[in-house]
Picture 1: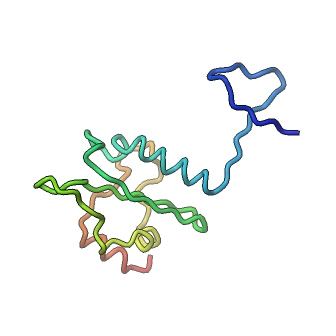
Picture 2 (picture 1 turned 60 degrees about the vertical axis):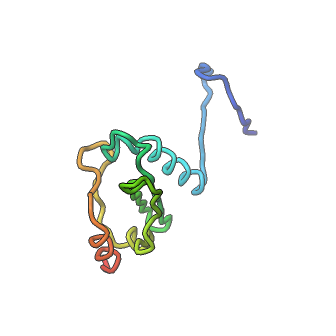
Picture 3 (picture 1 turned 90 degrees about the horizontal axis):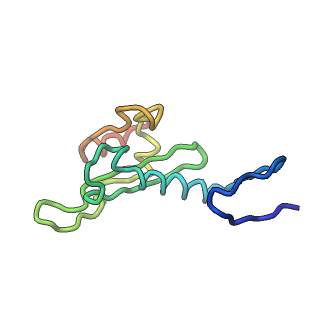
Length: 124
């Protein structure tokens, strides 16, 4: 019988015991999403991560994930919305990988809305 344990921080692992985490697709998605948000300043080389907003999508069938960031305000301080011209599902499907690892430099590509629209129309 398995026991769920919510435990003490840094509790020692008893001899001949195991600790297991098994998660569903939804929990995996949540972990990826939250990890990217927690580290978006570093991952996208942004000094003030509060100045950006991120948009995410995942395709569990292909195993692909995409995160797009943009400024959250325009020059006059108005909050920006994601352009209706951006289709994250199409971008996820058609954009080639930007990196082979999140632990290396050059993880992301910086591109324009026009370049995004071209990628969305490609059949990559």
